[in-house]
Image (cartoon, rainbow, N blue to C red; front, side, top):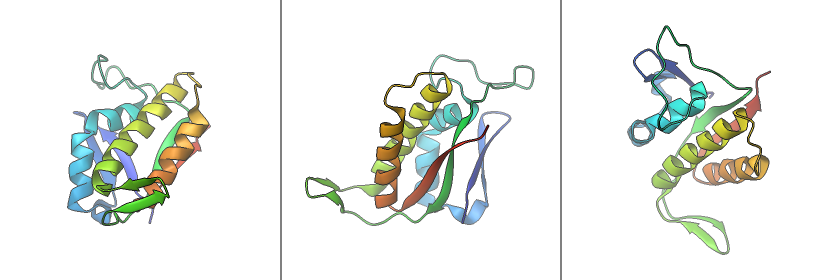
Length: 137
């Protein structure tokens, strides 16, 4: 199932279909709302004014698509040296970090983008969240 995220007026996030996310993921989205909105609209999470109807947000060619959310219970073993003990917290952090990486890429900052994106996508998949970073233009 593909999940769509959209920024609505008043800095709200719409998720379609609405039944795609469980309560824990919804709570994570609420906690990381600023970073997610920044990723979706291409503005910095801190310091930039909220987008309004009179000042539409800028967008970039890269975007994050959440395809499936089925969080796994912890612990999750990534490799022989790394174990995630709290998958929900890891999902929150990795979605926010991936959003920031996409934001930087959309602003032309290419520092390690592909390596960062690949790492976050793999960590999220290990925790049960399947995402992809795609070029829209």
